[in-house]
Amino acid sequence: MKRVGSILLCVGLMFCASSYAQQNTIHIQGENTLLVLGQHLNELYQRKQPNVTIRVHGGGMEPALSLLSKGEIQIAQAHRHVSSEASHGLVAVPVGIEGIVIYVHESNPVNELSLAQVRSIYLGEVTNWKQVGGRDQRIGLYAGESHTGVIPYFEEYVLRGSEPFGFWGKNSTKNLLDTIAQTPNAMGYSSVGSSPHVKALRIKPAADSPAVEPSIANIRSGQYPISRRIYWYLAHKPQGAVKDFCEWVFSSQGQLVVESIGFQPLTPEERAASMRNLGISSSVKQASSGN
Image (cartoon, rainbow, N blue to C red; front, side, top):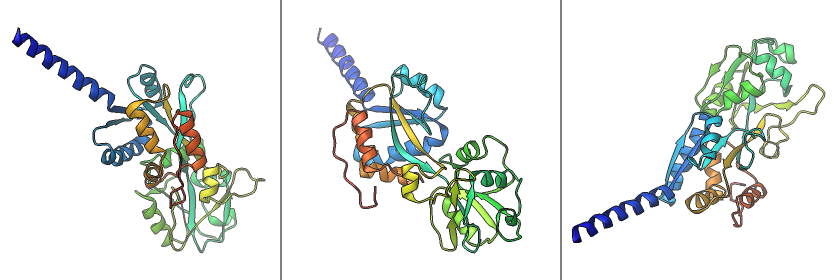
């Protein structure tokens, strides 16, 4: 009887350990270009909560929503709002903002372009700066990092899925800006950044629209035309480890992680609204970085 009791005790302990592990494991899945977001959040959050395991997967939004509805993952992440039919009954909250800025050399007399002009340039229909009010120089095309989805977003939203003209890719915003700073005829796009001898162009949504400066405020407000929100989808309001993790993501510390990979953090008001939608009661304090 003692042996049987010991076996039952061991089985019980194993079940409890397995149940605890499941409760403290968070599965995040979604678009491949958001893998880096989940991975960086996991890396920093584990320093705060080493007992929580976060698994981050890609594979696209459609399978992620299917797994979310079955309870096999806790969070699905997307670059945009998915259709109301696909997201029916889910809780959707923005976690960051993505903006693409168009850069040229500071000596370039061109200060603004319309989205249509940018599209024509990157499709190879416009190849000389004089065609858009600049000098008689061939346009050298560049693009920055793609690990956060900058290039796919640009090709989807600006090029509308058309095949881009040849350009030189750079592995980071810094490398892109350094190249443009040394190349007077260059034009490139990437995340928000700054560098001596480089300027960001104002962008007009339409030919007859006012040009919008790619300032942090305009990107975060959505006034700048090449900007969008990144969303998390949950099957229901979170509890336990998932709730704690979400609360941390909307804290100043969590939003600094969002910013560190090239996205823009939410405003304090948006963060508070997201937490209310998730059923989390917590004050949001403004960080020193302006979050």
